[in-house]
Image (cartoon, rainbow, N blue to C red):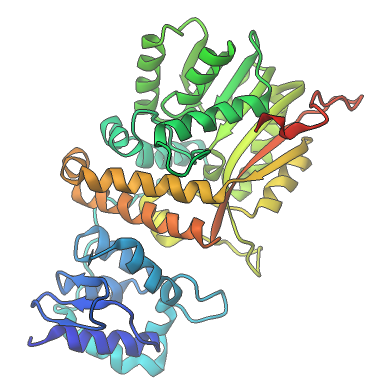
Length: 429
């Protein structure tokens, strides 16, 4: 097929109803599109079949993960150029999936079919999650967590660096190191919780043990950390032993809903609540409230999304749901605060650190790209492509206020109203 790129570029513009801002490189080596722009490389015509049989974001994701689509040039620039066409059109605008179904674009679809090869749906990449059934049961949550976190501690070490903290860092200096920024985030959480020697801290979704180790070592507290990931727990326990903190830190493979040994003086939940789901969020907040002593504090560090016009509908990112965080759900900040208050908490402080996460993600992407061949060896080419795309796209979304991240400090205020907080709470910064 001579000059496949020119034909494909024209068909894409017809489908989108707008100029396509990237160059296209087709499987025959031909190119078309604006000179000097990053190139979307269609390595195999199978990519078109992915799009035809799963129009929209999921089809694009499958083609990317399978290696049938790639980008030559700066990935951030490429994503920024096409984001308005594919992901930022708004709820009332026609997305790519609807465009492919629109009768006005049938001639373009027929053209894609002719270019796509055999009219058979390609199998999804093996990295796509297979769900066990209902969402947010104990079983489905274990499966979802395992899918994301049990991909190998060596891979996460490559991406995250020595801190092994998989949440937004806190950058006092944008030119500082990732390690310093993660340490400063953990210290900020400890100060907001007002940790003192002898207190008990519950770290929900403790990951690889970074918060537990920091809190025990720097603030003298006893910590129970819970995770559903066996690989995280193994790593965290080894780390605790190496730090000589086994007398003060217990790491459990346990669902937060099964923790019954309260009360605790403080609870940290850092990057975990996104896995809870809207249907279970009030239960989550109520469980944590019940585990706190009167006067105890919760620090809930959570990604948020912008509100939708119809909040009664279920909204999910197809790529993230299929390949990154199965069953993960983002809620607007106001919804999170309301649910915490409905559970009994008094919300005392909210800090948005949206720009901090964009910078954190760019550091993670840089680490992944710098050691790409080792990353591919540690997981799989498809898995490495998943992480590169989702982290780069997420960085842009944080930068453009598509999503945010907030630290919400809440207190189980006793009946007499004594919160235990100073009059000027922001002294911790």
